[in-house]
Length: 97
Image 1 (cartoon, rainbow, N blue to C red):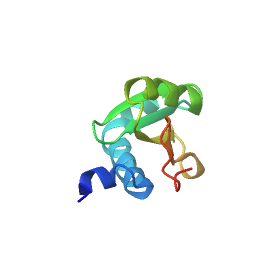
Image 2: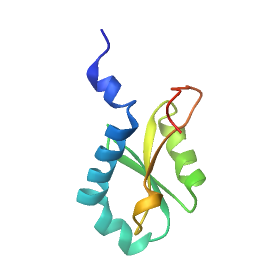
Image 3: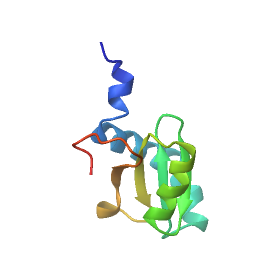
Image 4: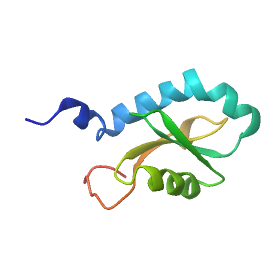
């Protein structure tokens, strides 16, 4: 039987929901003061976040710490199209963009 918490960490919808909640409740105010326009990759299980000037930079820093995780990526101070979940690393989950 597969652990349901592991499944949750592979589900882009759950990651996006958790990542957005972490951003709204804990990161939005402090990050928007000094990092507006930058990108933040959030690892939802640990709630750690990684900043970068580009999506690739933020995800590259995040990958160094958590090479097999899926991150919630947000452009600080923006909404809509800039909120995505993305898989990085060598694993292929098939349904993750």
